Amino acid sequence: MNGSAMLDPTLLATFVTVAHTGSFSEAGRRLGLSQSTVSEQIRRLEQQASRRLFVRDTHRVVLTSDGVAMVSFARTILDANEHARRYFAGSTERERIKLGASENFVRSQLPQVLHDFLARTPSVDLELTVGLSGVLFDRLDSGELDLVLGKRRPGEDRGQLIQREEMVWIGTETTAVAEDGPVPLVMYPPPSMSRAMAIEALDRAQVSWRIVCTCDGLMGLRAATLGGFGLMVQPRGMIPAGLVEIPSSPRLPPLGEVEFVVAGPTRNLRGPVAELAAAFLRH
Image (tube, rainbow, N blue to C red; front, side, top):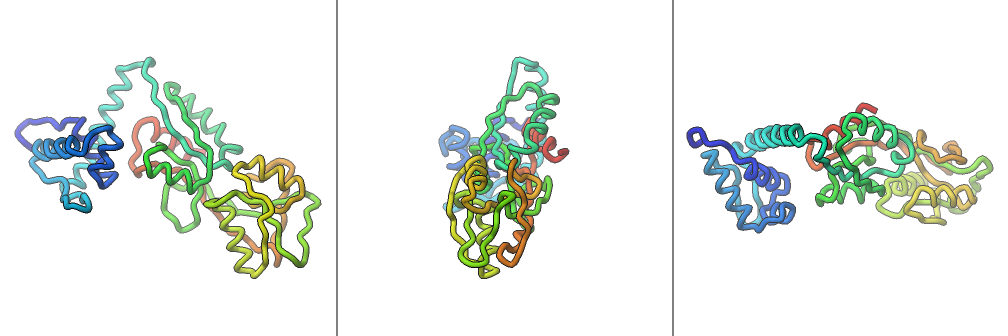
C-alpha cells in the first residue's frame, strides 16, 4: 500500500459488488452508479493498494490473486464499519431484510424462528416473499432478496443445510388409487420441485399420470386434495391438516428426499442477514 493510506470503505463496497457480479455495468446498476464511476473507483482502490485487483477485457472481469485476498479484507472492514455504525446509531436505526421462503417452511417452523430472531435483533424490519424455491433463488441471484429459505435436491451444494425431509404422496383417509388409468395429480406450477419429483418418479415406474389441478399456493392444493381431485406431494414432516400420507406402492413409487437450506448471495454473510441465517441453522 501507499505509505499509511487507508482503504476507503466506499471503494471497498464497490469492489465487493464488482467481485460478486463479475461485471462493472451490473455493479453500477446495483449501486446506482455509472459504469465509468465504478471503473474510476476501482482504479482509485488499486492505486491505494498498489496492486492490480482485476484482469479486464471486453467480455469479463476476473479477480487477480491480490483481488481474491482483497475480497476477504474488504468484507472484514465493511463488516466492522457496519457494526460500528449500528452501535453508535442506537435504537433509532432500523434495517430491512428481504427474505424469501418456501411455503412449506412458512406454514411450519418459520414463526418460531422469526420469534427467536426478533428477540435477539429487535431493530430489524422484514420483507417476506413466499414462493417456489426455484423462483426465490432466481430473485436472490438478481439482488431482489437478501436471504432464501428453500429446497434443493440431494447432491446440490447451494446454501447451508438445515434439514432433510422425505417427500411423500398425500391424500385423504378415503383416497384410493385405481389399478389402471393415469394417477391424478394436484400440483404447483413449474418450476416446482415437488411437481418435478412426482412426475419423474411416475415416469421411471412407467405409470401414467394426469395433472387435474394446478395452484401456486399450498392452501389451494390442500383444498383440491381434500375435495378428492387427486394426490399431492409434500415433505413428510409438513403434511397439511386434514390430509394423510398415502403409502408407496407400484402405482405410487418412492419420491426421495429434499433438503431445506438457507442461502445468501455469497457464503460470507454479514450483519442481521448473517444473524437470521444462523437462527435458521439453530432450528
